[in-house]
Image (cartoon, rainbow, N blue to C red; front, side, top):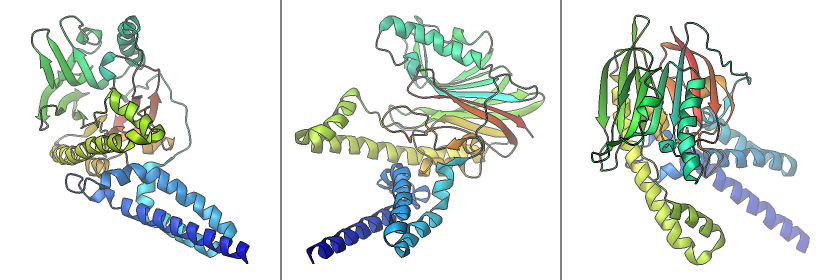
Length: 368
């Protein structure tokens, strides 16, 4: 009798738990359509999609053994949310990246280089990492380089690391200290002539920019966009607080509220920035691509709104979830190369040499 009651309680408990996961996943299917500048709390659901999808897959197998009829619910839920799964999982055959670029193809590198600081805390190692970043990029032999968190100063001429092979560049210069000649922001380097460029500044004292360069490529003009959208701006203290949340109950509430507030602010600002980017992409008269650090996952409004019907080189060529940011979680694909339909994508790679908290993206494509 007692055993039967316990079994009945456990079964009901898991049914309720499964229903909650189903509800959260279905709500997450709305995330790409609701601008977080208004619906900021939906941004948290976007981050949860990989974990919710995993729980639903596990529940299918669980209920198939315990009570098969119940497994229909998570199956139907995943079918309803197939669009969220499509942008999360790439389902191509794994292919080896060919380092030698074929004639007639355009190779693009995109990378958030973390201000040339590397991941080491040693001063001398940081100085060497700056050179290693430039050498790693040069080893890929790209035609166009898009970098975020790039900087340059009178004491450290980082433009000189690239200018010999890439005589054309456009630098956003979002932050500047005139006394030392320090400048920072996003930059586009090109082997081919840049005939025009534009910069759209995002609002706020710490807002960066969307920049675009019109490049003449074998008689055709293409437009390259790059940007660095609003980050969570987690400090060292925030990362320490995340550890406290797990291990110290007395600090958990204050730490959680502070982190949640920063995330809310970032979701809201990225929603506004995504609209600015989309307007610029729609207004391009040339074949175009955008790359950069969006600071948001594929299941977000930011990604969906900016990408629209454009291609995602990762989804076109790769296998799995992918990860471009190495901290916090294994599911953070937040850096992208998105060409429009005028391009054919041939191959793509993500390079990790421990020189940044982001992976370098390398893509080969050709203009149709």
